[in-house]
Length: 365
Image (tube, rainbow, N blue to C red; front, side, top):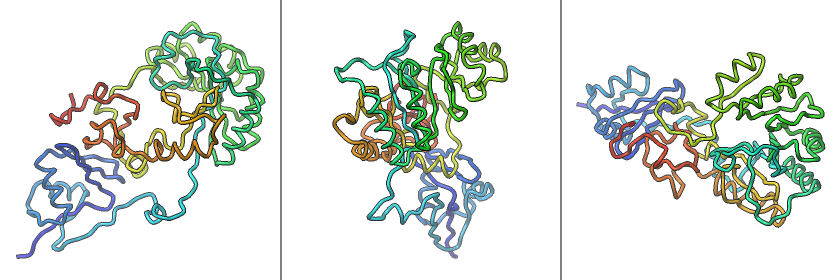
């Protein structure tokens, strides 16, 4: 009697955790959560060990188009959105910056109580560290260098970006260099002018500010996205009306729950498997020239007064962009979790405190 084997299709992946596992179907964007016993069975099957052709697990997976039976050993080359040979080249393709956040000023006309405690800020006031602020010429050179490194998008922020005296000159230069240019503001200072291709993000953190924001930006509302604090969203939506684009935001650390897992597709799965999906291609530069992976980071990698942008990118690539969840020396809970390629947990989040999945009990709390 010949042996029977079961293999997952090339678009299906087994991701094992400390006790359980998930099967991810990247074309159908579906996940199947396996218990401990079925995890062991699936591991044996993927290792080309003979299986029971009448095993309910494999019959069900075949019915769901996750895999197939065979009377001989089959070796599967998995689907991927990249050329695996290009990853092994001696001369790698130059890294590209997708988003550069330029913190051009530390000055702000508001005094938000949560400013220093916001988890993932789009604007920020840094503690004074004795460094001199960058000059307008510094920022011109930085923009030119960013364009040279193939940067796609630039976001000007602060502090309050409208308090920076040369903001309009920097916007003009950014657009002349071919960069998609965006501005983040609290909306309380009326703009002198807004270029038709400039994207504007306005944080709405206090309801009394909304009237001023609407008045200052009504003429360019089609270019504006209101970033509204979660608990104010419904009220602001009712006041502003449907003609304003809005997006919910929060200053609080996110809670990792089952309902917020990302459906696995080819891009989302591999972006987490091969890199840091959140930080890959991002750079943040403060008003004194300190370079960070993002404004949520507390530790600069270097300072552009003393070092070059190319040096900064080299560090960001090795320490942040290409450091996936499996390679980090912290967040060990994530490394033992079967949902690690379907989760948006930030590398700066304490997952021991802010994740509701228990590795020991293999269940969502």
